[in-house]
Length: 121
Image (cartoon, rainbow, N blue to C red; front, side, top):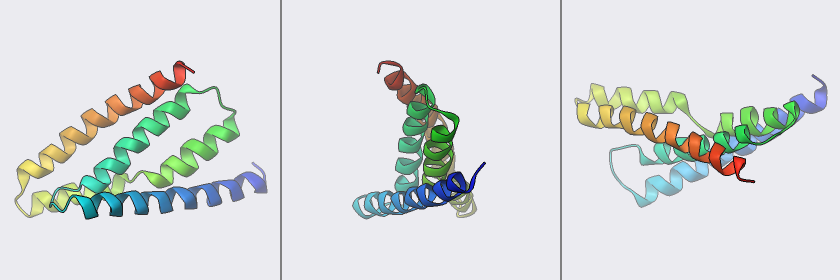
């Protein structure tokens, strides 16, 4: 890989991280609950986007920039795991289990939806 691709990953990944921060905050402000709706919104929208990108006939470098750099920085598995773990530690087992089930079920459905939409283009 050349320097331009590495620089592109850094820049595009930065935009993904900023987008994650903005979406998470916007959702969290509107839905003031203990359940991590901001993280859920980020991860589900990221799954749609990654499914869409995967369904397109992109070059390797374009897929790297869009999928790995942007969506990889946008979505947040580690935050999802930490929030789920914290809920369980706080004895909010229903919220922890709901976070796992809802995130996985909606995430898989969202990825299929994104791929389906890309296939229709």
